[in-house]
Length: 340
Ligand code: PSU
Ligand code: MN
Image 1: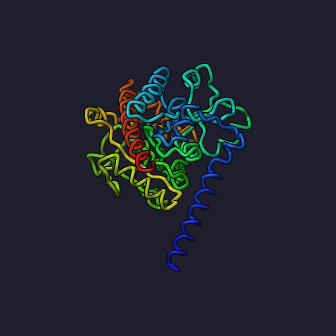
Image 2: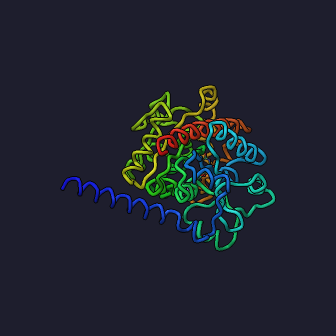
Image 3: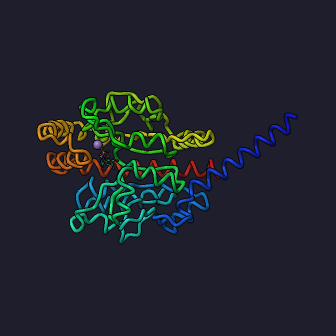
């Protein structure tokens, strides 16, 4: 009898897995408004390592031409780890998973295309229906990565609870998305334009694991390796990081994991200096009422910090993204081995 039960359970689990896999790829099969780059498609079919990359950072996070240069370099860094990069964006109302070099150039040239949309979850349907171009935020990138079956996503900074968020209710949609997408998001933490303590509280409420990656217990604060707040968890190598994702997957859990990878040590001193400009930008945003203007708040603050630091913040920004891309590639490679 126990044998029969086991066989029945195994059968039920297999059926469930098939159903899950089918539903996951249904929109792709039924020719929805989504194109997976052949190289990415091939990697996914052969269960090779793939790392998703976002494009709001390209369209709204960095000035031209550094945005394009960084997007390319980040793709190359992912390749150097053995993984395949999948830069995700919206082009003329189609979701692209993996961009051709010319498509990346087009998205990056915001000067020629100033109406390019910052696409969060709420903007996906409308921007597709209206055939717009868009850079996907962490939230939209998580959605498309999960849809395609990509397990790791590398970026610079996640959105979070804005300062004063307890009254403005400006809480990034990125946080909720981590409850719905079984993807490991590798970032350098959240910028101190945000309320880092409340952001971590919120993630705790949502049940999203926050894991500091290597050399520190602190949750990193983007330009700085330290936020003064400890992450609930810490791992020091890609294999253990991949195990977290793998076991959540085995348990059919819907949520992802936030990995916080601190900016490389040589940028720490600069990071501490940049903090003053961050504080000034936040003060100005409050004075100008920017914090009440929805999706504009984050791009405005990023741009202002760039101006105030005469580009120093940009150098750090590039360095920390290149670093998360490297770690993301390593975690994706480790995950591919586990799932093989
Ligand atoms: N933080 C940065 N640079 C960025 C972003 C955040 O340091 O470019 C982008 C990311 O794409 C993130 C989005 O998902 O901003 C969050 O925007 P909002 O706070 O409006 O949710
Ligand atoms: Mn917001």
